[in-house]
Image 1: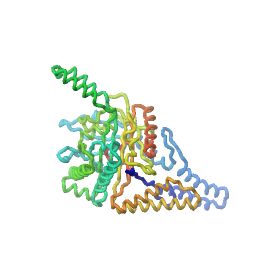
Image 2: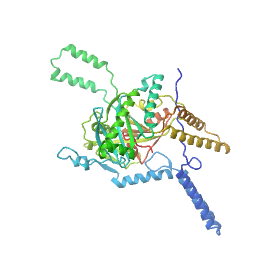
Image 3: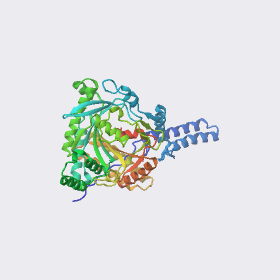
Image 4: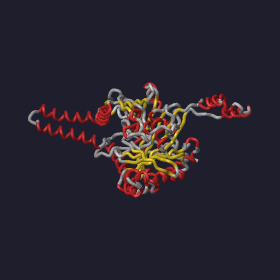
Length: 508
């Protein structure tokens, strides 16, 4: 049986001319126009006219093209691209002085045991959240409303897809079923759920925890009168059980924007936030059914305890992800330090040691054919690296997807035609990417399936800055093995960190 492969198109800016985005082209155009005007204004003086003509154009070229790397960062970008990032970082420093301190400890609780509003604040990079409990198939779940971001989300935990343990045919079937799940949400124009996020959380576990349990059991008074043959049989069974030093958790998050249709449906089911949450619970139940159809075993929806544990474990891996008794005000650590451009530092209450986190985004997906398990080097090929990998897909109906493909294909062909006219060699990777875009359009047109825009983020965590730098290099190496190109989001790690939480962010 031949191995089935997949291709991703190569994103190109859709500016008026060339490969620069529209903002960069505006800067270049403004520099050229300013230079011409100044040259014309000082036409009586040759030196001034030449200076006025050349200087604005040179400044525009430097802003758009000259590579620059600020202190404390690892990426070289143009001044144009650093401007927005620097502005965000300066605002973050002004808001909190660079160190956000959780008010949960000082705020305490009310007499009825509920936390006061002062305790429910979010650190830098996360929009304000309102958690509303709902019931889905008799189980408790939580719907997260984010008014500032204009969206609402809910999450299911699923068992490991296990693609790495399946043969090629089973992998292809699993991906086709996942495509049917996406199609059910994306190809219905009036469906409010148009974004789905998959989270893969990998963390260290204790491979000797079972042996310690056996030692404690042997010392317990409860087992003092147990027959020796029973103790021996249990010891033999424990020795035969293999334990892993890495634990994997998988989650699926659905995202819906606040729209009039969603508000109308929510008002029919309840008042205010409760109505919106009730409507979202219906879509979460639909996701549950679709996941089962896709042969994904649902563990449970994330209720307040599970959501709190997941978020806290992401910021503070010392907190066990299965400890779901933590109150919501303690979902975030005590301190979140965003002063350094190359990482975010977090510290839990009562701890003297910090965790250091860095987030990268997938700047380029594979432009060459890859198999179904092409992400395996990142998902299972980095033992002892604490990480979260997030893939978010923005869904769109088939008609819009085909139109977008036509625009991308037209841009690709125009770029290659322009290169031929200028006598330049065409990058074979561009030819492969253009072919992938065209073949994807043919597949969309033939199947009638929904389209999607895909973004990916990966957050890694370490106990020290030195370990974090080593882990960065390991992650970049594994990404290259997966045919991905990643870029670390220096100066905006706090905002990027939120994209690897179950909030389905990081995509326009």
